[in-house]
Image (tube, rainbow, N blue to C red; front, side, top):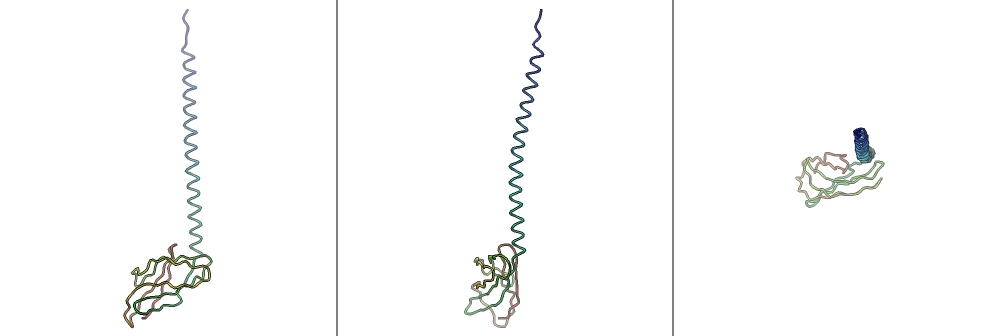
Length: 139
């Protein structure tokens, strides 16, 4: 009489294959949860920044020039704090100093820039969130 061991090896092979499939599913599921959580956190942060950008509003209230120094007064009339990131004259960046503006606050943004008397300049300030405000000013 011969013993058949073939049936036992098929059961062991099936159980081994089932274990491998379950382990791979657990790995994929763990990776997916981490990726989804990271995506969700990133999207939440992005939507928050967009909302803050929409609440941001500032205006130029005064421009002054003396001895090669250009000074621009900026008023934050929005509902959130503003960080001024750039001052432009005729689309040329003349100052990239950051200036923090609290709600309702006025501050001066200064830059060295030689102006011609009687010339008209486009003065623009931009925030870190990408909002801008510009005026035409005659020196």
